[in-house]
Amino acid sequence: MDLALTDAQRELRDRAARYVDAVLIPLEERAELGGGRLPGDDVARVREGARAARLTGGNHAAEHGGQGWSAFDQVLVQEELGRNTNGIWWHMGGGYNVLSRGTPEQIGRYLLPTLRGERADAYAVTEGGAGSDPGGIAATAERTADGWRIRAEKWFVTSGDVADYDILMVNVVDGDRRLPTLFLVDRDRPGIEVVDDPPFTHNYPHGHPTVRYDCEVAADAVLGGEEMIGRGGELQNEWFVEERIHIAARCVGAMRRLLDEAVAWAIGREQFGGRIYDYQGISFPLADSAADCAAARLLTYQVAQLVDDDADPKLVHGRAAMAKLFASEAAWRCADRCVQVLGGRGYMRTFAAERFLRELRVDRIWEGTSEIQRLIVARGLEKRGVERMLGIEG
Ligand SMILES: Cc1cc2nc3c(=O)[nH]c(=O)nc-3n(C[C@H](O)[C@H](O)[C@H](O)COP(=O)(O)OP(=O)(O)OC[C@H]3O[C@@H](n4cnc5c(N)ncnc54)[C@H](O)[C@@H]3O)c2cc1C
Image (cartoon, rainbow, N blue to C red; front, side):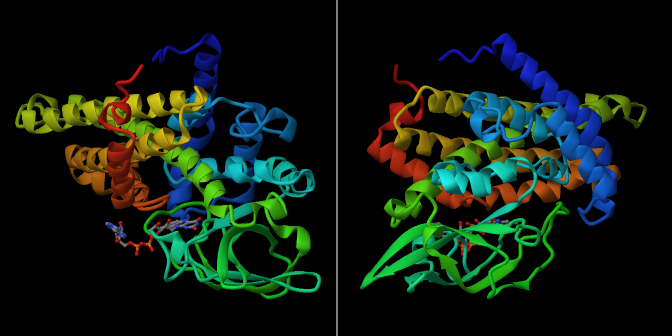
């Protein structure tokens, strides 16, 4: 597998890095001290900067207003975005990949305006009683004379406080059958209510509220049209694979920034008449973190390359789980070590390491917990074999 960058990829990565350094990182302290929220003119600068740098909607086709990047290109950019704390890059805009599976009419109504920054989406699957096992969701859609009656209560709806529509996973009721299906639900329908908007560990741009739906939607609200009824799980997996790879890439970026800051600090800091970097109690955890970062980077690049090579989707699913598992666990270890290297400063919210320590924790939970990733990897070892899961084939 050739992981060398083309000139175009190097240019893309460097362009993303410049944007992160010039636009996103300078806003971090303001975002942190503002509970994650930024004033409107800062948000506009983030958005316009991303647009000017041609970094918006990388996972979508150019004809839909995206950048048409390969999975590998996306990873290069996500890695740079991962160097940013407080999720300020969320303001860049973008749309969930499943929107591209909409009907032409849905693409025009949802995806295109979302990529233009005129609409905002949220993706609601989890419920109070169904998290790791989305097969246990209780949300339903029942046919009515004019369309569908939706009844659902969704938890942890990221950006559900600002979204103007949701991609909603519900079970279509068909006699005794329950068919998992994604619906596009506009928030201006009567009967949709944010019932709780709790604070979370990180200070990010948007909340993760609980949203209750008891509403009517039109007959054409099924994402992808009627033939996609019962195929919500399939679409969901496409989203999981992409987002797990992106999470892994951002964790790599976070580790790079943590290492940059902790190594520079340890080299410059003197205690007991010498550089703390020269104490192995300090330099060894940094060496371990460098090994973690490099290994996570290779796993992530390899799975992105598998996507671009159109490899067996089941193998990609397993390898994406492996990359997300390793990178998120490694980034958490790395953040903890770097906080320790920084001493008391590592506990200050004005230092990136402190923010990363809180922010990276959720990467071991969302888009499937580490335990769920282990289950997927273990299943892959059995079904696809050890060699293929280790990337030894070919
Ligand atoms: C900040 C944040 C944002 C989120 N955003 C969204 C969003 O936008 N949309 C959305 O739909 N969801 C979202 N989620 C939900 C997230 O995907 C779930 O929290 C996650 O999948 C875990 O589900 P749960 O919280 O119900 O935990 P549970 O499923 O109850 O799990 C609890 C513990 O049990 C373990 N466990 C469960 N089953 C097994 C098993 N078979 N073997 C071993 N261990 C197991 C889990 O790993 C975990 O440690 C978000 C969550 C957070 C915290």
